[in-house]
Length: 235
Image (cartoon, rainbow, N blue to C red):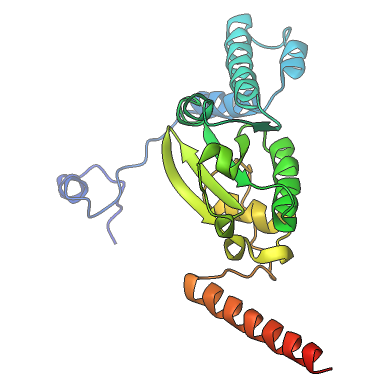
């Protein structure tokens, strides 16, 4: 079999039409050493770079320090939230639509006194602390949207760059009172609303309701409750 790396006109034609891979570039020992050293320096912290001053060229170290500082500053700039902020209708445009370039915003609509709203609110407070790069805001439903129906609570709207990207509306969208922290975390992860740094695994017991499933479950629950009430009356 002909060597695909050989310098022949036939191989040149095969590469031209992407039939064989481009010829591998042969690096010198010095080039390979420089690449390996650069990869090692990329993994160093600022303190570790300072310890290498006597061993490495000062100009090279300064460049890596500058690169690391920029990475740290960028990370710090993104991690600037860390709490759930209460807003009103007046704040909506500023806090949600004008949150900033590439900022994910989780808007939570709730009503006091509803157990499921308290549950989701607790989860969101923990998520805001864990993922400070995401902006979490909340508002009493009717304060933010006049006449917003209670049956749609809790509600989460997810925005990015001023546009509505995803939504969770009503108790069935959350799995009802069985919704755990990791369930809601995974939902936000699926929507790309949080930066996890690693792939999240879907909880094994996480149940996702579709619209028909939600209606069926609600109907069955209503029938069971009605039968129970009738039985109590008979007694």
